[in-house]
Length: 238
Ligand code: MN
Image (cartoon, rainbow, N blue to C red):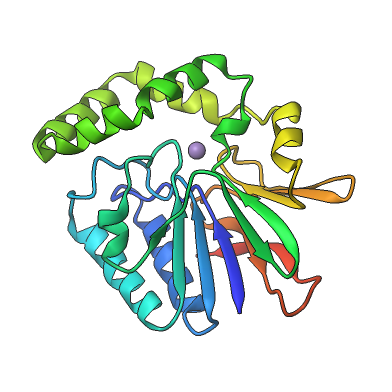
């Protein structure tokens, strides 16, 4: 049994190498009874579960093969793909987790989250987040035609200001107090978002940061509960 944690793949049709890296990962772990946890920013952008394209179909087919082989896929949203929902995940029996999820592996309590909520020093982003993540607004957006959302997304891309905003908050690091709070009732905190892969030891607790997917490799976390010490942040090359 293997627990695998990844985040910040930022998959898109513009970067086929990243898509290849993800497909290879599924093939590699397919026969290891894997619980795959994707902690947000799986996709670079997500306009709705009704969007479809050949590059995405290839991913869905690979995920179907992966879960049919007895593995499981769990997803919690990031700041770029927060609109991803059950409809997409149901296509391959994937499961949507709450934005903050607690997990127990071999007696260790583990908190999972994307990580943007820990960056409390970025006040303007947190304000923006509150508005854009309003469930009512999201529900309304889901009801608009796909063509409208496509237009909205391309409008966003054209405004370099918006892109700048994405960048500025992803170079921000976590706030120490926010981390302390997140670790209060757990042994280990696992998150992504900041693109600063590392294992931090804080007293008898750990904060593990997953890496973003680069052109050739990514830092991913593997936990094998059968061997208590087998927790490793490792390089996945593609
Ligand atoms: Mn992020």
